[in-house]
Each structure stands twice: as C-alpha cells, then as structure tokens.
Image (cartoon, rainbow, N blue to C red):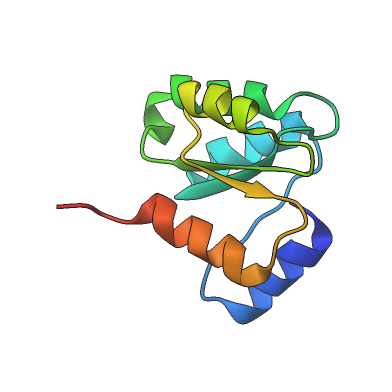
Length: 112
C-alpha cells in the first residue's frame, strides 16, 4: 500500500490500517494482526503479490481475510487469473479513495 493511500485511509475512515513494503513484512503483519482485508500491490517490492495471496489462502487462521489486488498494469486476463488464486477484488492504479473504500466494502459485504 502506498504511503498516500495508507495516510488517507488512516485519517478519513474508521479502518485500522497497517502497511508493509515487502512481501516478507506483509506476511508478518498478516500473522500478527489477522486483518479483515489486505490490499496487495501485485508487484510489491521483494516478491510477487501473488505469493502473499497464496500464503494467506493457505493459512487457516486467515481464511476470512479478503484480498484486493492493486496494479497499474492489471489486464482483464490477469484479473481472472488472480481471482482463481483467491483475490476478492481489484483496483487499477491510479484509483481514488472512494474506489478503494468501495472495493473494501464490496469485498467484506455479507450476502444472505
């Protein structure tokens, strides 16, 4: 998550927001905080965001965590392949705060 979106989500929403700059730190933060939603830049430094998604999906204690992919290079074909490995939503960069909040709300919506 970029510093900009981290700051805006922290200041303008009621979300508890954490950030990580590498795949390793993202995995550690997920283990520590058991988040409801993880926004993953699929081109995160130090690894591939898909690896983080696969780690989250294989961890039973994170089974309820929703995943949102972020990328400036995401094609429709890539979106479908990301959904196949467990992503719940997608944001194409650049995106607005409203689009980010909408993606979070949609990913966490409870359907009865």
